[in-house]
Amino acid sequence: MTAAASLTLAGIHGFVWIRRRTALDSLAFCILAAGTAGMAGCELWMMHLNVLEDYGTALQLYNFLRWLVTIALVVFIHFSLKAGRPWLEWTVIGTRTLGLVLNFIVSPAVYYTSLEEIRRIPFLGSVVSVVDGIPNPLTIVGQLSLLLLAAYLVDTTLRSYRLHSPNRALRVGLSSVFFVLALSLQMMLVLWGVVDAPLVASLFFLGIVIVMGIELSEDMLRAARLAETLQSREVELGRQRQLTDAVLEGAPGILFLQSREGDMVRWNSQHEKTTGLSRQETSIRKSPEFFSEADRPLFLAQCARVFEEGSAEFEAEVLSKDGSTAPHLLRLTALELQGSPHAVGLGIDISAKRAYEREAANQRQKMEQLTRVASVSELSSSLAHEINQPLAIILSNAQAAQRLLARENPDLRELQEILDDIVAADIRAADVIKRLRSILQQGVPVLEPVAASALIDQALKICLPDLKAAGIQVVRRLPKRLPLLPADRIPIEQVLLNLFKNACEAMQECRERVLTISCVTEGPVVRFSVKDTGCGLPEDTDSVFEAFQTTKLRGLGLGLTICQSIVRAHGGRLWADRNRTRGATFHFTLPLNPESL
Image (cartoon, rainbow, N blue to C red):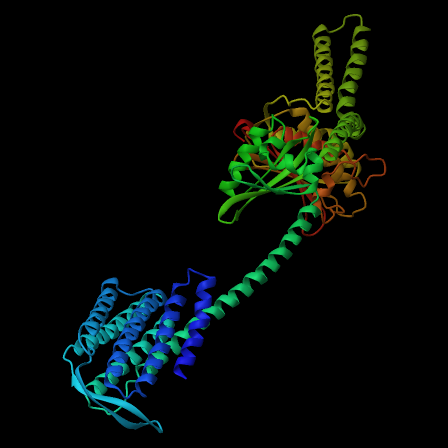
């Protein structure tokens, strides 16, 4: 039974070694199992011998098989646990080999100096042969080799437990130690006549063979499971490859994968269609070669940025095989692929977008021209007050001069004052026209030191008749001292006039009509505020500054837009707030030092 089980396991793992020559642990196990089967056969032979000479021959063969099994066990433990000390392994092998040499030198065998007789004893329900003889002191060499083998197994088990696999070390190492110690004890008791029984060392080696066979079988099972896992992964990789192909082909533009050195790894058909290159031609080119010569330095710089920061987005011209180019919006993203850095690039053709932007720019330019012309209608009502005033002054002064000249002795000094007033009014009218032209041509404001209170006073002076006619109470909240600020006086007055006029119109349907004007210094800026008690503003207060947004029947919706442009040209900001009770407040700031803002 022992021989059959051992030979079966030896055949299985011998076949494994033949198919995989690197599996040296399987080869060592095959030799160990085959040697154990030989020992079982030799023991069975000795149990049926009746001649002393034949028994001595059987003992010599038995000692050789023990040597073979010991060497195979050491080699198996070496490759299985991978923690044995080489010097201890060679000590075990050397001691066991010395015992083998002595076995063939000493007659009849190393176990006995002489064989006396063969006796028949009952054993396991049968009658077997045992030998009586004088024990040989050299037997200690064989026993020493078994003790060294046990020491080697203990040391290797402990080292493997700490360094590699604790479970494997306990299963293989401890079981081997147990069976080797049991074997040593059985042989010593039999050879020295303490126990009347035949030699059955193969039974103990069978235990080692079974444990090691189970361990190797688990290795084979793990290998089989690993193969199944790898096969499953290959199937999954195939599915992922199909999914990747679907993603590549479903991209809205060119999609490619490149290495850090610029080698093309994968790309979609849209890439080939855009560049006009075949798959073979694409595979032998570097990624920068797909862009125009002017944009290649940009592409290389962005690639370097991607591998440092992780991503980059830019525009570049993709070069076609026929020399034509097409603008693309590119986004590069870095990723690790098989341990090396790569980059994924996605390019969207923006030729249509560029054409649309050019058309939009042309339309915007035309609209700006129309807006500047149309703004005259919006500003005319407020500017008329200021232009009519100098014109009225000029007319009344001219008529006064005519009456003065009709006298027999006209007062030349009074006539000179009248002429001075006419010149001043004319200059005022010219300034209004000049500033109007500057606004319409989007010119740079002409800055001069102006008192904030003077701007408010002049605007109120022009708008005061309309405010009185509408029954609006004007409240001024101005500090005693306000700094001079650099501003273009006429356009800023027009901003205030526009805000006063809008407040006047917003309070037409209200019983309480109060216009509150305030001005304060806030750090580097001066803030003007115009508060009314009118109908208020929509939830989105910024919408009132959009062009062509108006609530007036004949308005163009450009007044606040133009006012905002004037304030921005001065380096300030115009905005609106909804009052807590009712009405709205418009604020705008002007910097005290525009160059520092």
